Image 1 (tube, helix red, strand yellow):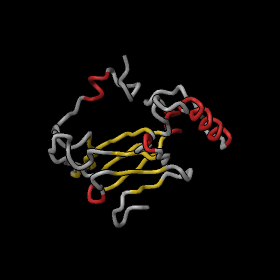
Image 2 (cartoon, one colour; image 1 turned 45 degrees about the vertical axis):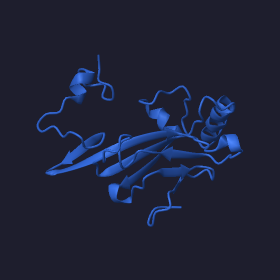
Image 3 (cartoon, helix red, strand yellow; image 1 turned 180 degrees about the horizontal axis):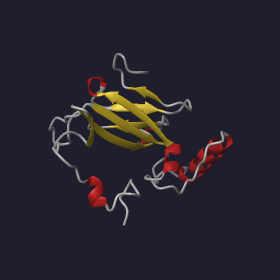
Length: 162
């Protein structure tokens, strides 16, 4: 059986085996280049409509628990990788129509789209937006909006887009 991400890995366990020093309690992963280690935290969010019951319609991705765990323990990492997925929640009656609209728009742009792609497949990236920030620029709660067709950050911090 191949690894999860690497089809050439002999197994999932082998793919995740780390030779040498094991870094613990440092986000979701790390990259080592020479003597430098950069740790990262990964967050994913689907489209959220805050206060929908009160008539709100603004769509955004809301990423939470960025600086501390739900229990309040501070998180230690160097880089945040936030992934916004262009799908509504299944509770939204527009879910399937929205997927078809996205497929049609991306196909018209000449992009390969497969709405049944699983998250580990390359074509899944066609419905994702990536926000990569150094830890020093990460707010307590990060929101990103895609209503203009172009994702943008809205977190009210100096130096971070609005």
